[in-house]
Structures are given as C-alpha cells and as structure tokens.
Image (cartoon, rainbow, N blue to C red; front, side):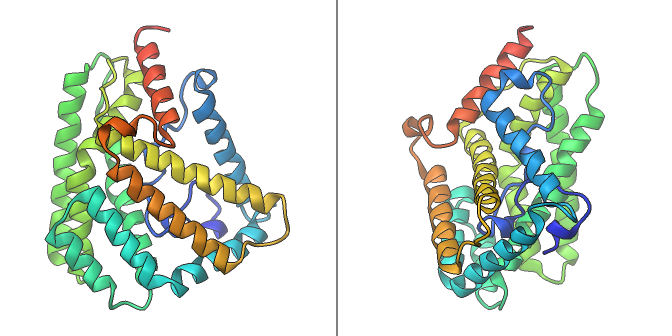
Length: 293
C-alpha cells in the first residue's frame, strides 16, 4: 500500500483508493485565509488532515486502511471488465469521443492490471500537469496582477506544460497512455486553470473568474472524491470490520455511475447536483474576499 506507508500523507484518495480515476488534491484549496467563512469546505479539509495523521506509520487508521485497500483492489480486479467499461464511459463524457480515449482503453483491455494502470495514469496527470501548473502559477504571479493578466500567464504556462507532455509522449514506450495523458491535459487544462485562478484571487486580490459549468463539474468531482474517502475512513474508525470485497464492488460501481451522471447532467440540473453546495460556497467566498469582506 504505497501511499499509506509513506511518511508524507495528504488525506486525499489516490485514484486506486477511489474507483481507478480521480482529479487529484491540487484542485482543492490548501489553506483559505478565512476558513470560518467556508463551513462545508473547511470541515472536509479538517477531516482530510485528521485522516492524513491517522495514515502515517503508527497511525490509528493504518492497519485497518491497509486491509480496506486490499479489499478495494480485490474488488477492482474481480470486476475489472465491468469497471473498465464504466471508466471508459466516464472518460467519454468527461473528455469527449476521440482516438486517444479509444486507443488507450483498447490497450488497457489487454492488460492484467488494467485498473491499476489507469489509476497510475490519472495520478500522473495530477503530478505532471495539475500540480506543476498550480505551482508555476503561484511562483509566477506577482502582487498587483489582475485577472486578465493572470489568465494569460496561466494559458502560457499550460502551453509549455502541454508541449513537455507531448515531447515525452513522442518518446514514450507506452504511447497510448502518454497520448491519453496529453489529451486529458489539453481537454481539462482550461477549466483547471479557472479553478486555480479562483483560488489565487484571494492571495493576489484580483477579481475571481466566473467558473464555467465544466470547471464547476471538475471542482465538485474533486470534493466528492474527498468526501467519499472520508466517509470510508469514518467507517473504519468506528469498526474493526473491513467492508467485504462485495460491498467494495457495489461502492465502486455507485461512485463511477455517480460521476458519469455528474458530467452528463444538463446544465439546468447541474446547480442542484450532489457536491455543488461546496462549489456555491467557494464562489460566494472568493467573491466576498475580492470585495474586501
């Protein structure tokens, strides 16, 4: 169990701890300046830190979490065909139909550990694109910058990162995965920039952007992954029993179908979707912070 035995923990689920996909912790604010004005988000961020402590070596959660992950992986492996099909449906509604999606999932269908490979690919997207974009934006922005200037810098940084990924893909041994990763960055880069700009607006005091519906869906998905993981850890803390492989399989199926629904919802229904309460809370918070509240 790689993440649970490292000395650094985040409390956010690796894709293999969710349902073989995930957008990563980088889409969440790390330390809002006025957490009391974000009651829903702050409660989850606080729980995330508690989980991180519990998963450190010697932590109270670690032994039970290892058993939980074993059952999770067994469920993924035993139902690999069904879960790979659901993950492909999710990729199609998230990214759109393309040769990159089709070729990558075709290559996965011939692998023994397809869902583990898919999990690692989504984690690579977070570390090689999202985290780097977030850090480059933080490093490059300067006091006094406005939203238009910040957005232009973000687009330039995105282009540079995408070129690096494309160059790496051209030399990659496993070309289907590398090209899929590039496609994900190209498709999701815009809405992820919006989320990062919203967060940066508090520190650099520029007007927060109005998130597109796609950015709102991504933001909601990231928070829902954390919420689901926190609920699983709560169950572990309250019982010595580990959820069975069968129950794990039911949960994975539910989570995948829930995320497919999130990215398929008509725009007029999006604002009432599960997880959108935090999206609304964040929008109001950053708006108030810009206005000086």
